Image (cartoon, rainbow, N blue to C red; front, side, top):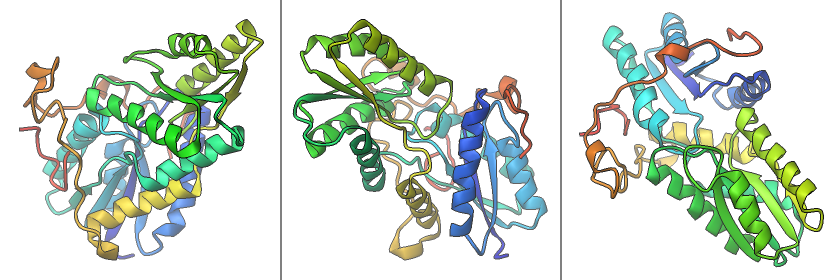
Length: 306
């Protein structure tokens, strides 16, 4: 081993199928790092936890750990929870360097992967169809705005007649409201694409809501596109995030886009959150809650948002 290790940081889920898909993706990634130790960890609902994954890698001799978040956007998990876990580990293990990668974000490869999933469900022509892109939804307006940007890129790039953005929770519009609005716009085909990495309670709810809309509106063809999962371009993006941390392939250090981060600057409606302390929020659900029991910051220094 090289002394360098890779930790893939997952969210975790109460849905065992979601955890299994995450582990299958991680198994596909493992051969991409042949010289390095490799592990996974979860923020909540599954094991090993992030801390347990870090501890195991250190116990096996890792001197440098590349922590890569398996998360699409930089909301509270990437800005608060994961840095808190990493900082806590580093405080207890000063001899181990942990470099924290940036979120997967709207990446050219992920955009192409999304287009592949959509094209498989909705072949051309698409000018008579509406695309509904559904994101997780967070209390971070910057992360939410990326779903609107993604919808626009896919709309124009794939030749849809229209596109809308929706969210499974927290933010608006929610899926039901967005489906009803889409139906009123007059398109005879509505393509629903969950911009998620894996299945789980939320993706299954999105699909169920789509089926309910189809039953209510039989004159409209509702099409369910697959989420990203272990698309080869998703795996390629993880490898790029690791290269950003090591300077490999001529890539510099990771540069998270902080222009509209509510913790960095005063954003309309969120002014009081600028400079908020960086802390984790998942202590009460760390490592518990799956239906199948498993034991399986900004930049490199994970600094607070000041």
